[in-house]
Image 1: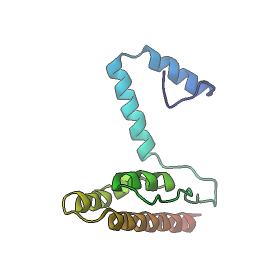
Image 2: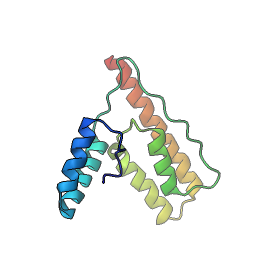
Image 3: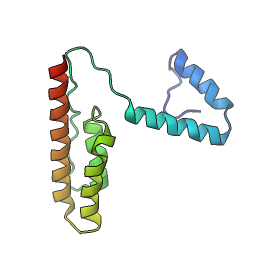
Image 4: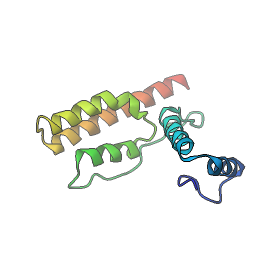
Length: 128
């Protein structure tokens, strides 16, 4: 059974479940990797003239850099994470390899996500 789909889904989900159940383990893994890929690169569809606001996810007092990246990705689901991959991995490296404090890296990650969100919003508004 597909863990990402609920049993009350529509006909597309039902069809996907039935097809998934017929696959061998290797093909199931291939389908899941492809679905993950599509979810990552897919351009979101927004109603005309409306750009989504970030999710209100509060920063915990104690947080690892990895958890901060996950939190920021959830806070800004409209941002294609691949576009920030290089910068986030550079910041992660400064923390892990160079010993830079997690709180400083997380501060910079938050600013990176805010800046990218503002740029996307500006481009969206210009194209409306």
